[in-house]
Amino acid sequence: FAHLHTVQDMYGKGRVLSAIEVIGCCKEISKGLITGLNKALPDARVVTVSQIASTQLKTNNMMSQFSLVFLVIIVLVGGVSIANYMFANVQERRKEIGTLIAIGMSPRQLLSIFYGKALILGAVGGVVGYVFGTVLAIWLGPRIAHIPVLPMPSLLGWALLISVALSVLATAIPAKNAAGLDPAATLMEV
Image (cartoon, rainbow, N blue to C red; front, side, top):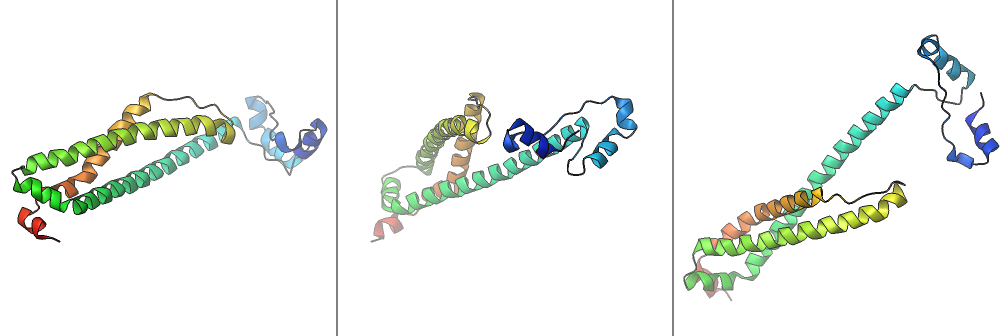
């Protein structure tokens, strides 16, 4: 047995060598192999494979929950941004909307224009987001985590579904406000 830093120095690898694996039979482990190793190597941490697997599983679960929290935040911020954009669009085009209603456009037709715009924005945003995210993951994965990242085409469908649904939902209130505008009031605005 040797101290980990001693082994690192012996191999000339610096702090790259971070673990030494010792294989012991079940009987030796139950007889106190781990306790003995911990006493013999006070600066080392000796654990069993089941402890390592348990820790890795806990870490993976924590990262999954952390990712879910980020996803919810991103979806909320995206929805608010789209709704804000649509509200601003309705405000900027009040006279045009009033003119369209005055010449006979039905609220249903007006809603279809706004929802059509939402569908286009959502679809373009989903595709661009998928492509940008995939390229970024392929480029940064090996640099940060030292693992290759492969594209996942199945996520394109999810990206499109989520972005279009979010865009349509965020457009609902601004589109309803636009369809309910009074043409006379909008045409009298300066």
